[in-house]
Length: 310
Image 1 (cartoon, rainbow, N blue to C red):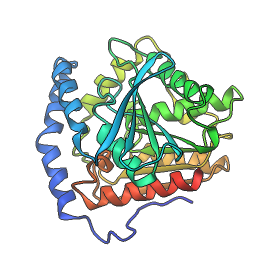
Image 2 (image 1 turned 45 degrees about the vertical axis):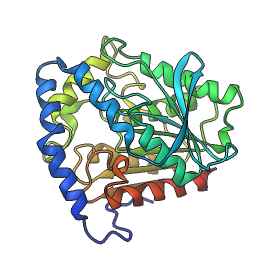
Image 3 (image 1 turned 135 degrees about the vertical axis):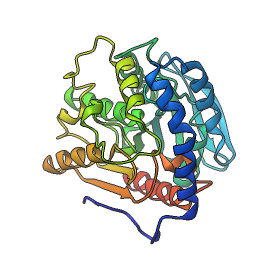
C-alpha cells in the first residue's frame, strides 16, 4: 500500500514542527550550504556538531562492539530485554558525517518504542574513505550479526536514515542478488536514494538540505566509483527478493520524489511497501521525537512495523 500523505491522528502540522523547521533553515541549512560551497572545508567542525546531536532520547545502555572488524555500538533502552527484535541501523550524514554517537538518541528511541536491540556500525566515512568503504562495512556488520548468532534473519530489520537509507537499500539489494536471505524488513527514514542531486526535486524548499551540500557529499563519496554501479544507483536495483519495506519521508524534503519512485518500483515487483509522506516535516524529523509530536508518532508506527516483521 502506498500513502501519498500521512496524517493519522495528526490533523495539522504542530507548532513545534514549524518552529523546528524554521530553526533549521536559519542555522543548519546555512552551515551546510556554506560548507558545501567550500568543498567541505568545515568538515571537522560539522563532524563534532553531528556527534553532539545524539543526546535526544531515553536512558539506554550503550555497549561498544566490534562487528566483524567494523567498530560500533549496541544500544538498548533501559528495560528492553536482549531477547527482543534486532535492528541494524545505518546512520545518516551524507556519507561524510555521523557516527554511533550522533545517532544514539534515535537508536534509543527506536529501541524503547520497538523493544528492540539496535546495532549501530561505525562505517568508514568519505572523503577519507570513498565508495565502496561504507557499503563494505555495512555488509560486514550484517554478516557478522547473522554468522555470530547475534541476530536471526527472521527477527532482524535493516534500517537507515538519510544516506544510511541508501546503504540499507544497497545492502538489501546485494543480499538479494547473491542469493543470500535478506532481513525480515527494511525501514527507511528520509532515505537519500537518488545520489544524482540534479534529479532531486528542486521545487521543494527544503529547510535542511541545500543542493550544494548534496553535491559535495556525493562527490566525496563517489570517488572513482561508477555512477551506474547498483551499489550506488539503488533505484535501478533488482528488488524482486526484497522483504516488506516502510518508507517515511517529510513533506518538506527534496528527497520525496525519489522515495515515491522507489515505492513504485517495489510495487511493480510485488514487494509489500508503504510510503508515508508526513506534511510539514523536515529531514529525519523522527530523531526529534522528544521535541515534536510527529516524531514520536512516526517512531511508534516504525516500531509497529518492526514488531509485525519480527
